[in-house]
Structures are given as structure tokens and as C-alpha cells.
View 1: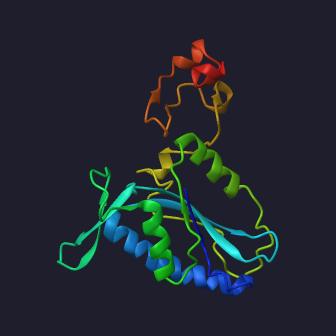
View 2: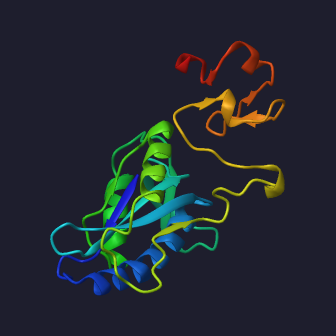
Length: 202
């Protein structure tokens, strides 16, 4: 889970939105240079006091550390690493993101923390169903995702359902059901024995 803010000197909603909009575009291009292909869901939220905006992301594909190095074109930059085998020259993801957010014109107050997949689903669902929280900017995209999020191969064959559990009443008899969190396909005869999935919900 990643949170980005606008600069602390900006205390007006539209100005904070424009700062974030421009900064996030540059920020994500840099992220892709370091980490490769990523997927994310992004939503804006207004502060309670002054209504300035900050951005929340659920993002996949990041590594916990980065190290200085060179990209393929020999340009100096950072490289993603999973393990920190030595301390010198290794940045935590949190430190790297704070500095990069500042370089991209946003606030230094950036936060990144690992999130279990079940919490990610709950979090995204919460914000997809939340109102616009007094965000009154014309044309704002309250929620934005990368192209691959929520895009199965042949969309005509799929429908989505998000929740902590599902029941036999949610589906037509014989319909193929796949748990997208685990990739496991639920056999049709499962529903003859159980009323809900996962089994512990019975």
C-alpha cells in the first residue's frame, strides 16, 4: 500500500490535485524503469481539515530494496533487489519512494507498507464503494487502475464478485467459479457438499 501527498505548502484542493496529477505521472514512469511492469489501483482522498488531496495506491511488483546502478542504456539509476545482503548503498523502498516523490514535485510524506492480499481486496472495495468525500473537482478520476487490473482475457465469459466469501446462491448450477486470489478453480460438485466458499465460512 502506497500513499503519496502534495507539498505541505499547498493547502487548496485543486492545487493539490494538479500537483499530484503531474507528479504521479512522472513518478510512475520512474517506478517502471526500476521495477518493470507494475499494476495498481489508485484513489484520491481528501484531508478532513482543509480538503487537500492525497493519493492511495494498492500496487504490485515492487521490491523491498533498491540499489544504485545503471539501466540498459548505461544511464545511472536504481535497480530493484529483493534481499539486502549488504547495507552500504542499499535503500529501503520507503526511503527511495520518499526521495523520488519529492523529486517529482510531491510531498516528502510518502508511505509504503506491505499489505496481505485479503486486506488489499477489502481496501479497494471500500474505496470503490465510498462517496467522493467532498472532492468537487470537475473531471477528476476518483479511481484509476492500470490496464490489466480487472481485465480477464475474454470479458464476455466473466463476471466479477468481490467479498470475504461466496455462496451457492450467487451462481448458476454448473457455472465455473475461479478464486482470483489463489487461482484455484472451484469444481461444480463443491456446492453439493458446501453452502459457502471458502470452506471455513460454512
